[in-house]
Image: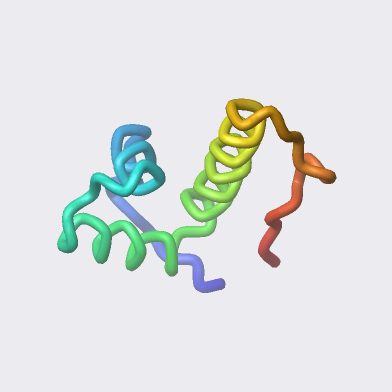
Length: 73
């Protein structure tokens, strides 16, 4: 993954909007572009995504077989 200097990384609100599916098309594209070049935000996103899946699994009465089922290298 490319590393690039960023003046403004993604906010927790941006992560929340993206994960919940409420980000607009332009916001979604900007978030995905930022994630493609910022290793710090990408790692934060993967952790947030896994927590989101864990929460959904618990809400449905299920647990994932692995706490880190979705890891990207």
